Amino acid sequence: MTAPEDLAPSAIYRHPSDSLFGRVLPRLLHAPRWTRLRRALSRRWPMPMLASDVRDVVYVSWWVDVRHAPPPPPGHHYVVHEGRTPYTILSYRHGHFGPRAAGPLRALMPSPRQSNWRWYLRRDDAPQGAPVVLFDRNVMDQLAFVAGARAFSDAMQPHLSTRFEHVVRADGGGHTLIEGGQGSAPGLHLQWRAAEGPAADAWTAAFGGHPDLLRFLTCQDEAIARTCDQRWASTRIDLPVDITQLQPLQLQGEPNCPRLQAMGVDLAEGLALRLPAVPFRVVSERLL
Image (cartoon, rainbow, N blue to C red; front, side, top):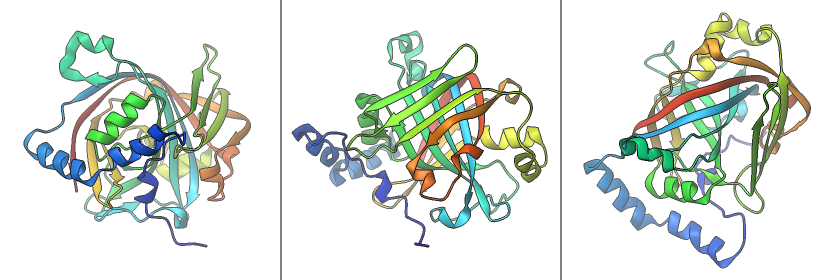
């Protein structure tokens, strides 16, 4: 087996098309002089708090052999059970994502689709504390948000999809479809239906019970990302998930995710949950 990848190369942006614009944009987004200037300015003027009324959040989680996990940031370790570690893809629709200070004017902001792919860590000095998520991949469907995030953030470095469908029907069923074209966005196709009952025993046993499992998978206040220039960035978030609102789902059809399948994951064994809505806030960001 090859050594686990460093996440820095996967943070590099590649545009979905090979047009002149598609070749020039990555150079602008990865310009070292701008990155140094932005980081210097952020030490004096921190980023504004961002807000979104997120809806139709679908979490799908799998167990992955921990040998496939990338090196964790210093001071952190993976959550491991019987040689495997959890990995979650959550996809959702933003609700007017923009500066919180805009107040009612935030209603004028767009509502992009987003998909976060993440591992779970704990701090070495708090091994029983709340998990910290480590971003593996991030995808958005609107170029303005992708470019804006990459230009002004180290912790959020999304890739642009050529096609992004995230549909949750009234009966609880739905699907997520992500295509990256020639770009750097990973591919994904999941279908699900509403399900009955709690999660499988294999999951609940690893976390000491169903409520603890739900809190572990959905309740975080920090996310860490690897930057293109091999730094670590941390963002603090406010995500008040009410675990009693989580609804079980059952995967259907033939799931497809080349990223996870390359790590030997049986996609049909995914644990799926839906959260109808939750307010989301990006509180702060810093380099570790």
